[in-house]
Length: 355
Image 1 (cartoon, rainbow, N blue to C red):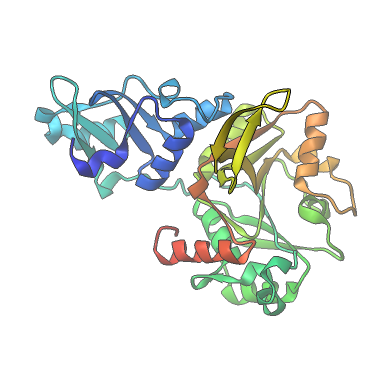
Image 2: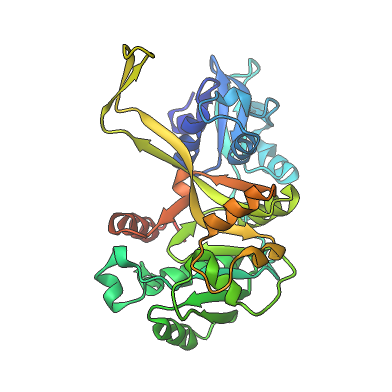
């Protein structure tokens, strides 16, 4: 097997969480699964997402989630690979020999790479919570409101809006409070070709409370997001999943791997140690701060009350309504809420890894 394709290959016992990291690293959204060097399956980020949504565990082997009938070509057919990828709407093809051994991988040319559906979010309102003081980023936020702190040469809020706008979103609601005039002045000078409605808080109302200040009655699901995160996901798929699932609310969730910096002890009922783990890694899904919400559930948010979106999620669950998650990889979620995270975000933007 060629060494340059090794980062796109895994064995069938690789765990789901390990595969997510490998897919993050290769940046092509796919792994090919081999047994004794022979191709037996493929695994995309979509396959992983479907596995997780169906309550699949992160420690499961990827053979439980992989596509067992992957498309492929023989070495003698590589001249037709581009046409096959176009017809099948795929972006890579493994090359095998007559013994099904993986010998190469062909990736699609730039002429038909994945592109954003520029009308996917047309008519979808986007509410961005931009009223907080950003105390964790002090003293930067003593001068600028957090939404205007630049990542690279573009304020974080403008980056968020641009990404939604690239999917066709044109109707934005900014909930503002702290240094709100600076935010309004910035976008007035920018003169964007999308609509911004400012929702002004007289007092902090949390990540959900200020939604009740919006006078318009929405007829479609709305997207609600914090102003300090970048989500590198396909927003068309997020909205489609929400609509197809019948969720009252969908929470975009990110994998988070955390290493416990101690030796962890496992014991039996009588206090006898049964095993020990040195600095184990825990994996779980966290709330990114991006939501899709059915418009009829806005009425459940109390008026003139400090109230967060997780509180609304709990209220929906208590009523027996569906609250689902749309999982993304750890590398697809960037949070600038603290200095170290902001530096990481800026480094990835400056490197060209994030648009």
